[in-house]
Image 1 (cartoon, rainbow, N blue to C red):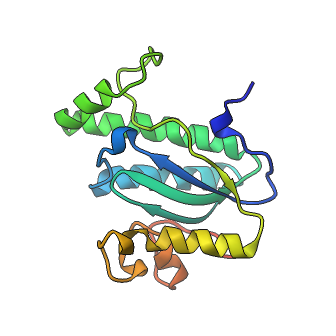
Image 2: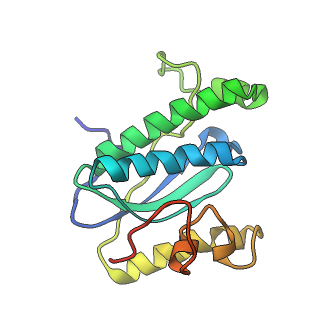
Length: 177
């Protein structure tokens, strides 16, 4: 039986998803860890029909809107690969405090790993209408503004707001929906 946290019922429409770092720890404060996320999305774009419509990367969680014929599998691959790569990076960067916390917060039944980067779940929300898509994109893009990091959404370089404003972003997105 599939895990409920990866239950995608329709492949016709995109989904809004949130992935949170275990314990809300600030892992995405350096370009190196952010690029692991971007490179994973880029890999999915190149090797499957994965379509990224919008995203924002904050220090401890990400929001994104995506679609594909195999979205549940793509998200599982994304979280698995990025988790391993980010943990490898943290180990090589000797980020001892973060690693100790990620080890401490690991679920006890996860016996094959020492650390757990991602919280379980992603709460996918189906985006069936244009108005819901606009609402979620606005929410995603306003996140850094509401936190006081930038004055306007397109100034946050870790966001698709730049793409929608006609500025080159870190990754190509699908703007036709």
